[in-house]
Amino acid sequence: MVMYDDPRILRAIAHPTRNRVLHELSAAGSLRAADIARLIDIPANQASFHLRQLAKYGLVEEDPEAARDRRDRVWRLVDPDGIRFRPADMLAQPGGRAAYAVFQRSAVAHGRHLVERALALGGTENPGRSVSEWSLLLSPDEARELMEELMAVVERRRDAGRAHGPGEGRETYSVFQIIQPYPEDDE
Image 1 (cartoon, helix red, strand yellow):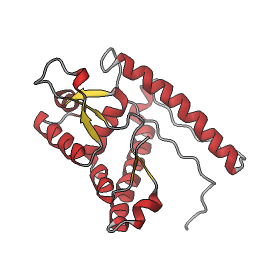
Image 2 (image 1 turned 45 degrees about the vertical axis):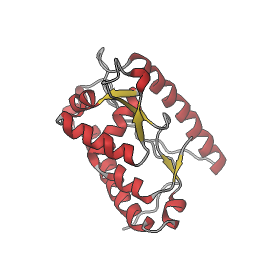
Image 3 (image 1 turned 90 degrees about the horizontal axis):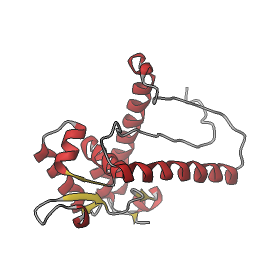
């Protein structure tokens, strides 16, 4: 597992298009710029630009085994399990606080977007769409155990999706998980 500590990475992944590129690569495993462009509805040259930016920060790399020939450029995440960092490590770096603030704003906006889209009335016809919220009495160790169990289920599904690849009626789904003590009201 790669643990990142460069604050510039937070700025790179805070960009909405690059974030979406990372999500598509996480779901599919390996993709060409043209595949990403088609999936997220952007020009292929724009997808290539964002892939090169992500490669510059060591987040994605070429996947020569998946290429059809030497000219075919296929990309994958450097760490197939995703991008991980410890906020404290990022904050300790020069420029870390500012980069974390940018990342945090972007992550909050993305989370809000996911929840709003999931609750939109027009999406209720999709049988694969679901919004759930539960309240559980847990110790910190039990919360960690629950997170690990959920991660195992998600990883199993992710690996199965990667084995099938995009197409065949499959599309990228977002699984948004928060496990935390019930937050106090700020009002």
